[in-house]
Amino acid sequence: MSAFLIYILKVALLTAVLVLLYHLLLRRDTFHRTARIVLVVSLFISYILPLCVITVHRPMSASVSKDVVAVPTQTATTTASERYQAQSPAQQPQVQSQAVVPSDTDLKRINWIVIATVIYATGVVSLIVLRLISVRKVTGIIRSGRVLMEKEGCRIVISKDNIRPFSWMRNIVLPEGYAGVSWTSPVVQHESSHISHHHTLELLVADILSAFQWFNPAVWLLRHDLCCVQEFEADASVLESGIDRAEYERSLLSIAAGGISIPLVNGLGESNLRARIRMMNRNRSSRSLLLKLVYFPVLIVVSLSLTSNKVYDRRQAPYVLTTGESMPSIESMPSIRRILYEYPDSDFYYQGLKFNISNGVAVITGCDWRMVDSINSIPTSIPFKGKDYDVRVIMSLSGTHFTDLVIPEGITEIADGAFSRCNQLESVTIPSTVCIMEARVFAYCNNLKTVFFENGLTVLSQGMFMNCRNLESVHLPSTLSDIGDGAFSDCRHLQDINLPKRLERIGNEAFYRCVRLSSVSLPRKLKHIGNGAFYDCRSLMVDTSRLKAEIGDNAFYVEQL
Image (cartoon, rainbow, N blue to C red; front, side, top):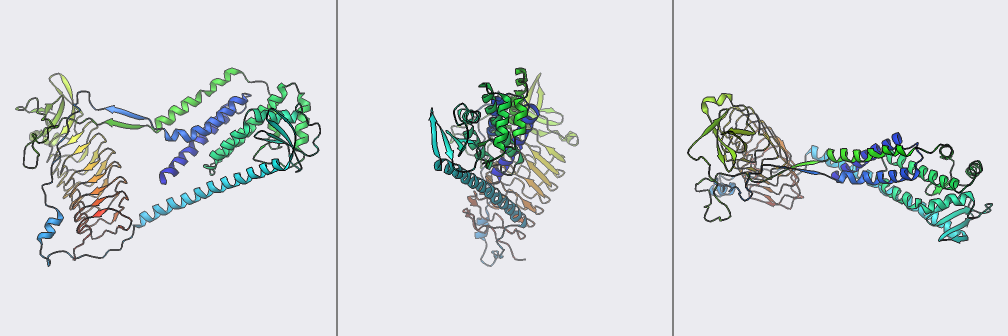
């Protein structure tokens, strides 16, 4: 529901901008029909534009092969359930009872969203009910009146109520005893103009859309402007028929002096009478002033650019398959072909980094340990034999002396243990282009404190941050759906973590012995919580009552001290 509230706030802001531009550029001109169209279109655009998101695709590399996929590394570590089953009953941990309640932060956030939603919905429903009551009152007046005359589907209805003349759909309603009733009288011509231009339907649509912005003063100003423009247009039609302007103005003044005005309909009230008389006496605006309408496409372009979404076309970079017991055989997976280095027996160096070329892109395979102290960044491309090759894969930089590591955009894959045991590493930023991170990438980085993921990654592989004992803050991507086994195992300084709403799986021992972890909001889409996922998280208070997920053995067990 919070997303809907944000959308409504965007609509309100855009409506305010459109009304402001109308007042600055068009309100005083005599282009009544154009102004009416602009106001109605502005109301619709304010609802449509926030829903339009232009997706900008950025290709990774034209030379990257599409049919190559990385082979995932199978789990080689023992799971929590295997270790627990190996223990004797006396050695197995005892359950510590924990209060199953959401954290204070979650309660405040949920309460504010609920309160705002209830207030907003109450306003919308109340306004719609009031409009329905007004419609019923108007239709009741028409039904109780008598039809005086009819022409081309339009009817003149005489009402016994003391009201001011108004039109509703195909009906022109006049009070009893109204003098000079004919199709050529100024008032009847005025109301006939409302009918021929379908002003009633416009106001009904405006009322419906305005109900969803009842809190926004700009939408009420827009409706008032629409009513005024409709009156200006009807007045202009009467004067174009040849009726004397002074006589028509006197008839408007006499009508405004008596009778009850009904706000819902096109009435000849006194509230905008002065503005109508000024507009009738104004000279016609030059058609060149219509060039001011260029603000519409400009505003649309600006709005779309502000809501644009940059997406990288995630073509898999070539991956150098290795051998080993945990790697499935190539013969058993015919859809995967081996990608070899173009120079398998040679290592090349650039700014202290060791690399090779694979399928037209650069793969960082290590570093020159004689220059390890001077390596402080990772390049986006590497020159080789007179040509620049984009860096796409990082195989190994374990033990390097990075402190604040920013993975550059363009990197798509980071291999197993690529930055493990980088003991001087304190912060890491991972861009949205990274689509594959294998196991234990940052394992045993003892001084790592903060990690920031941009949106893009969907799987956090096993042991990603295991034994990063000083890790305090992690910003996970909203695209994440799977947290692998032991991903945050033994991260003893991790206090809270926001799990993405799309998360479906938490692996075995994912937060094993995160002893300071106190706040976790489990997403409702969660389907599986692995064995020992939050084992010995002794500070954790978590609510599992609403979850439909499968919860593994010892998922929330806490050892007795």
